[in-house]
Structure formats: C-alpha cells, structure tokens
Length: 473
Image 1: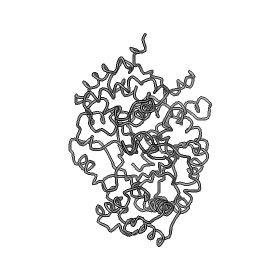
Image 2: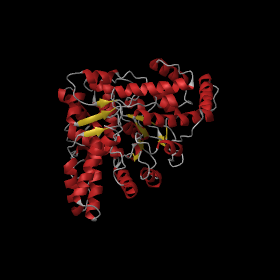
Image 3: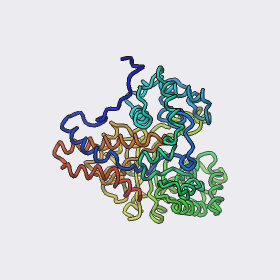
Image 4: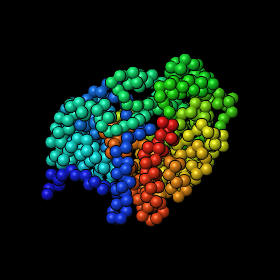
C-alpha cells in the first residue's frame, strides 16, 4: 500500500506494555479509568470560546495555528510561521488550506513525538478521519474536517460534553473582569464547570518593558494606589479575592527561577519606587520579583489558593520572531532546574502550613529524583507536578514515574495536567497519561511489588483523586 494512502488506524493497545503478561494487567487497569471524566486543573483554553459557542472557522484554526507544539516543529522544518497563520488573525480559506497542507505534507517530521499521537487520536476518534495525513490526502482531509465543523455536534460546547470534561481551569490575567466565566455561570443552557486561574507573572516581572503601566492598570482595577509597595501588595490580594469569588482555586506562576529570598519592607518599598521611576537596576528588579513570589506564598496560606510553579523557561528565545509574531510562538526553551535552596526561604516559613498546597513543575527532568521527590517526601505542602511541556511525552512520563515513585510514591503527585490551548487535544493528552500510568502500575503488579487491587485504587486516584485534592476542586 502506498504511504500516501495508508489508513489512519489506532491500535487499542497503543502505549501499553508489549509483554503479554503485563499487557493483560494494564488492559484491566486502563479499562477501569478509560471513560472517567476529565479533570483539567491547568490549561490555556479561552473560556469565551465556550461562552459564544461559535463554530471553529477551519481545520487550520483548530489544529495548527494555535498549537505551538505543531508550529515550532514545522518552523524548524522550513515552514515560515506566517504561512501557518501565526500572528495573522483569521485566515482566508486559501490561507487556511495552505497551512493545513503544510502540516500534512510534513507529517513525517512528527514521527516519534507526542504531537503525532495527539493529532492521530483527535483526527481518528473525534472526526472519523480514516486516512493518514500526507501531501496527497491533505485536501480531502481538509474538506472532511470542514464539513464536520459546521454541524452542532462539533461546536465547542458539544465537544466539551463529548470529551467528558468535569472541570476545566483557564489561565487569566489578574486585571481580567472574568466576564466570560460570569457569562457561563449565568447561562441556564450551560452546566459545565469552567474556573479561572490567577496568573500574575507580568505584574511581578519588574525588568520587563511595560511593567510600570501594567502595575498602574492593576491599581485602577483594584481601586488601590499601586504607586507604593504596600498598595501593590494590597492590589494583588484584592484581585486574588475577586478570582476566588469567581471560582478560582489556584494561582499559577512562571518565572525563570523560583528563588524566594526575602526583603525587608523598607527595601522592597525603595526598589518598588525606583522601578516605577525606571531607575532600579536589573539585580534590584529581580530581587523584588523573588521577594514578591514569597509574598504570593504568604497570600496562599491566607486565602487558600493553590500555588503552582512552572519555572525554568527562557521565554522568547529568538528575539526577531518575538518581535514579529509575539509570545507563545514556539521558541521558549528550557533552562536548568534548581529548587532545593531557592525555595528554602518559602518552605521554612510556609512549608508546613496546613493551608498551602505548592505544586512544583519542571522542564528539567534531572530534578525529579534529586530535588522534587525529596522535597515532597518531607513537606506536607509540596506536590510534584506532572511532566509539563517538553516532558509531556510517553518516555518522559515513564521516566517521571520511575524517578519519583521510590521516594515519594503516588500520593504526593498532582495528577495529570494537559497545559494546552489546543482544545481538541485535551482528551488525547489525558488518554495518553491514563495508558502510561496503567502500564507503569501493571509492571509493579507483574513484579509482585503491588497487588492488583492496590494498582486499581492508585490509577483511579491518579485520574480523579489527586487533581481534586491537590487543586482543591
């Protein structure tokens, strides 16, 4: 059969262990959780998509343009980002079809990647695509998808129900009025649970251009004078309270490092005033951000918001692309991880506080066994976040389990997060995690390290119990 006309067929045992004895156990475990509702406590889906329930405009807008996992590898293969619709707004049909053709004609570059797994699952299981993408099949698949997208069954709300999403957390700016969340909550035709997440990064990153203006706007929204350090802190506290009133259970933080060195109030106020005046040094600005991260932990002990840390990424690594296309366009690159000493000031103050849940994520898998598992194995506030971003791939997830389980078990982990803007990839990502964890637990059973009833309890807890408890859902 020609590769250009090969069928797109998903094997029922994909990602499960190859050994027949272990496979039989894994099948039973996976079968118990396969159809459980999805809990998504961290992601980047736009809630207005669900409020407005407008049909997706075209296949490229659904599968290609918003997904930097897809666009970055196509860009590395020589496809310009503007051809993929990045930074261009709505595409004409010709442009959307061309973006789709680029994905299909470069299908081979995704071999061995989780992106290939997710896309195949989406195409076959949601849209009934029966042929493998290629340059030859691109137009036929595009037409098939476009025809499906106009039907009610493929509108955002219908897909939300079809995906069995129990909770979907979005990521939101502290100044957001959360009108989309309010609209969903007030809609009698809507019964899903979509909650905001407090994401204050831009208001803490003093060194970034536009920081002073952002802090001024924060003050306007909170009706507090943020021209002083105490006012800045109060504005954050008030906006967190506003988010909690609208259903938020967590605050998410993503900085290059997680140092939490404290400043005394006088020094913090001095640097804050200097930063607003544009005279603070880079070192002072970074020190203020690190201190403010410590303050965010203090706020979490008081208001109960789960504190999640997603550190260690050099954002906008290629400045020309950043300037031309904006952020989140595929060139954010991981840095080395460091948690033990940087978090010590925070953990000495709040690590045993009963109100703090601190979820630590990393894109440097060397710290899983060296730092994160040991930290979570002592501090009752600390949980190890699931593999994120560059590590949310099959073999990396298996390494994660083996790296942390011997030190901290399963109960000190977060449950899976999909961390995606690509709405239709949510069920594929969660299914991948369920298959991989079923395989890992099946191996423990096969080695007589765990009884099967315990493995069944564990896999169910990883899918349902961990995310609900850790994220206070």
